[in-house]
Image (cartoon, rainbow, N blue to C red):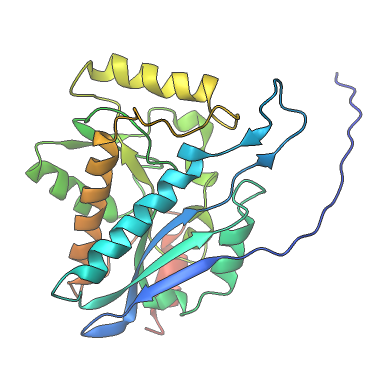
Length: 268
């Protein structure tokens, strides 16, 4: 049995999703989406210690930095991609994925015009990895495309090491998935070049215990960004491949989102 007394309060504010689009040279109506959430927890007076500011350096300033870097890379290339690139920084992820929920319901283009997307919820510091972790693995053909790119780098795809946490359903991409858009949530792997899987898991657990949703999630100039660069370069390559093709990667037939996508594409 459990007895509990809860207290809640409602506050209202105006906030924004921020979206930028780089028009494609051949098929501007078709889009590849890169997204990250720009919000965090702000000031929490209940936090222990004198520092009450939750900076969210990894979660998720790092993700926003990643999509901005990739946007600049695409924008400054001499050859414009065939398809358009959409970069979305969404709000209120920490309050229940509210910004991405709004985006999914009020997309600037129909869902059938977004070929695929990638979500970046933390592009954290670590040494280079031999793999990339796909959260919610076994969902879409984007994973096959990612695996092919990683193979050229001598790396591989690894499944979510903690599927019991349901992380695929706890970040912004899930709201885009619900309207049928194939979404990939992949990041640095746990099999580190220096220290192997033991070192990778230890690093992950250290962050969860000591910095996740705490004021201590702060930027440090001694961050090792080699894995973050790996993630960004690979994600850029994947986005470029999709943007320059005519293919429409789909959900696997076993995915709960496949039927939604098939119905959406009938009007494509």
